[in-house]
Image (tube, rainbow, N blue to C red; front, side):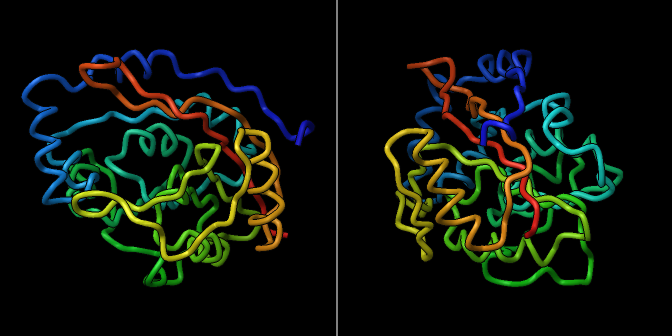
Length: 243
């Protein structure tokens, strides 16, 4: 793992922007109320809450191999902030999102975002992509193992999977009024970043035919609220190839 590590500076300008969008007062109270009748993602999208930051375009450029970068499929792209930074590196891009409210917010930003759950149904045509991204998705998806396997079928020859997840991994799925366990359990163990990363690579990714090419460690930032300007998770961002 040490030889594959790439040092990528955090996107300080984007993080400052996220801090300026913190929820306060009426919007925070409205979000709490809406979560009782809608899931977290729909409620957040309706109120345009929680700007998310992972890497900026320069950071993704530094991490990804130089080629191929023709087409991108971003599975579970949310409202599109992270997608917009990544997509600048590609000739064409498409995103998916299972939350209709979230998908609409992404489409309002000009992103080609399809309302499709690739954990349950296949991609509808024969398109193949140079990079398939699962950015902070597998720890929040009902069927993360299915997504990892489906990503492999959607890669063009020589393509890469770009996978990001907070570590230690705490898998759960947002439902209306709260959270639940996913249908498929990843089985990642470890109580710290290093142990969890080793478990993810050795127990999940390698047995499913994924090999580590490059990786970095970076904060995954969400704009905050009245208590804190922002919230940070400790993310591993992995570039993987098919074995």
